[in-house]
Length: 92
Image (cartoon, rainbow, N blue to C red; front, top):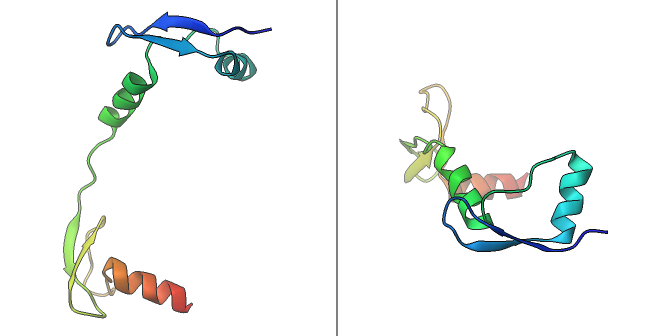
């Protein structure tokens, strides 16, 4: 039914294969256009759109070490470093 197609990436100009399986997937999802970028360029494009996550430093409430967390710590809530958090989670 579907056959592999060789396409040219509009970003880098390299050839890439649009496999029969990918074509079938596109058809199932209702996509009508073929991909215009190779996998590497698609991934790079996706990652460039993501904003770098702001990290905050706090003192771990368990061991006193430095904890880097993706949220602004509050004084009324304890913050744990990755190791202590994993230990607490494992203990239940």
